[in-house]
Image (cartoon, rainbow, N blue to C red):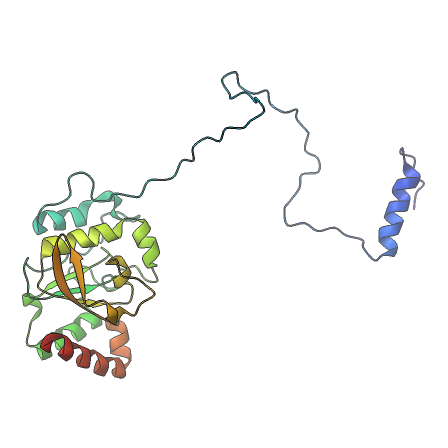
Length: 250
């Protein structure tokens, strides 16, 4: 090792020797450090900055406002809502292209609600395997797709989305306004993510939400597993039919 000629050479050498004898020859850190960076003197406070008088007064925090997707003039009927649903730029991050509109008329005996369109939907909601399962279920119920109001909580296929995220984005208010305009006599919701959007306590089972209250109106509600889960697990179909018969005969 070359002889150290810097000030405090003996002390520096002794320190390195101590760590080397202890078996430590490297230092690691989680953050990268610029060892060659120049140290700049602290910037002089701006003239209009708050003077330090011995007590620090905390500035009010800038809490972000909750999104108001509907704005000050929300759609007043289903025709206006569909147009808004397909064209409103701020409804999601993707933009209007590729959104799928709800189908049906206001006042239907049943509103069928799913979380999002199928992956392959392009012209109509639930045009794939889930839609075929729904059509078969409706036939067994004595109904057709044309008799129900068919809607989704989201305008496009959005897998693995968290209900809490959607609520923070303002989608709960959008869904409740949509239901108010559709004014169905009852709601059949497929998907565990829908009850939180309706204001349901997520600590309770979905079956514990027999109805929703909105704008001084009570609407009977039946929540079931998603159509994809029903298609994959026959036992869920049997459970759904038992609950459907109890719901419609009650």
